[in-house]
Image (cartoon, rainbow, N blue to C red; front, side, top):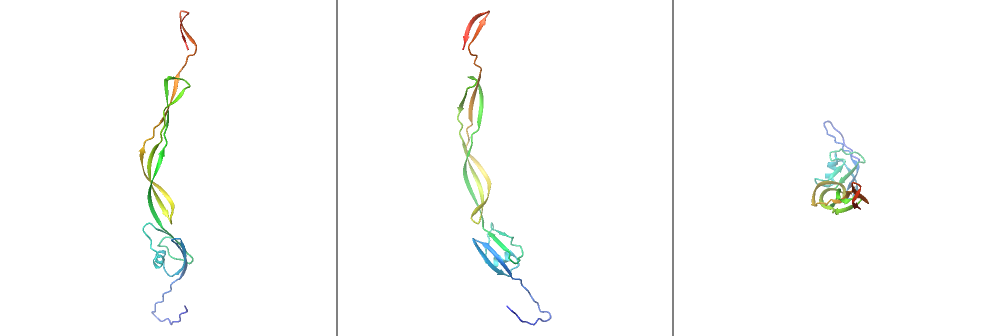
Length: 170
């Protein structure tokens, strides 16, 4: 508006800057003009309410400038549980009662299970970050045991005493 006024001594003149701004909030883009001083003042002026987890870029304390874009990020934290397997381990044991070169699974391996608690940071409806909270083992894994023989087979041999055969070994 074109204002004509006479400025006199001791008159206080206030000049307010008006800014063209863009606000991205709740899935929409708003083009606004404002004389607010900070991002926080602008959000209040526009009736945009933030909860304790929401974030604003740039921060609410940032002074406005022409063509500034403000992003309001709706943030929530959700805790969730997931069941996950615990792979079984493998062990090998030696046995002198089994022939060398023979191996046998003597204990079948069984996977265990655990419940893991995660905390998801959801920004504007999408998971932006996941952090580990805790885990509880609900079923211990059973290690798979493979027994490997170490007994040497002598083959066809004779035991002799004073040159006379005592027995045949096979």
